[in-house]
Amino acid sequence: MSQKVNPSVSEKTITFEMNGKTMHLSVDPARRLIDILRYDLDLTGTKMSCEIGRCGACMVLIDGKTYNSCLTMAYQCEGKKVVTIEGVNADEVDPILQAFLEEGGFQCGYCTPGMVISIKALLKEHPHPTVEQLKEGLAGNLCRCTGYGGIYRVLERLSRTEPV
Figure 1: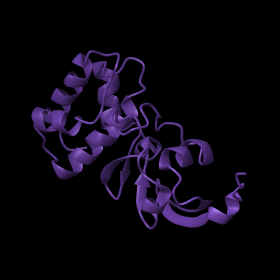
Figure 2: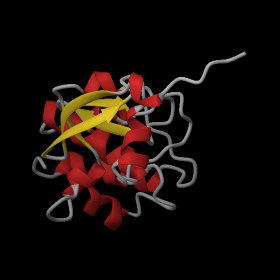
Figure 3: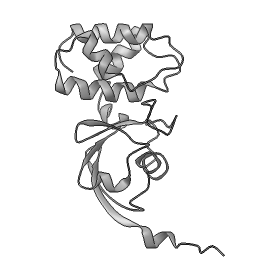
Figure 4: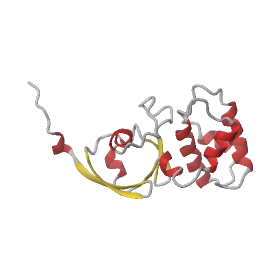
């Protein structure tokens, strides 16, 4: 006979910053960040795709570094600063997103949030990146519908512009 576990028994209060706002969430510490974002916080810009950390659709920034939110547990966010695509695009159109729009860097757009997050992180480390550095920065992100031509135009453009 299996025992039902009271969900509230395993919940702990996790405190972290989400897109500039302090959050106090009572959640199971082993719950995936992607589920918290999408189902608890209604931040659906972060996409769920492979769920095993291989596609980059669920990419977020935690303390400025890229993380697959499908592999990140709630307890790992304690005291950290988490930024999703909604935080990147909070006040105005981000120059990276603008480049994706103008260069035809997406078709369905499903992979775009993860790519923007990955490029954001890379540009913090390398304000004047080469195209090769940008390609390497996107190594963990997959697009299944563009053929990458538009995405490579975005990278070319970003390698020629001022830091964003």
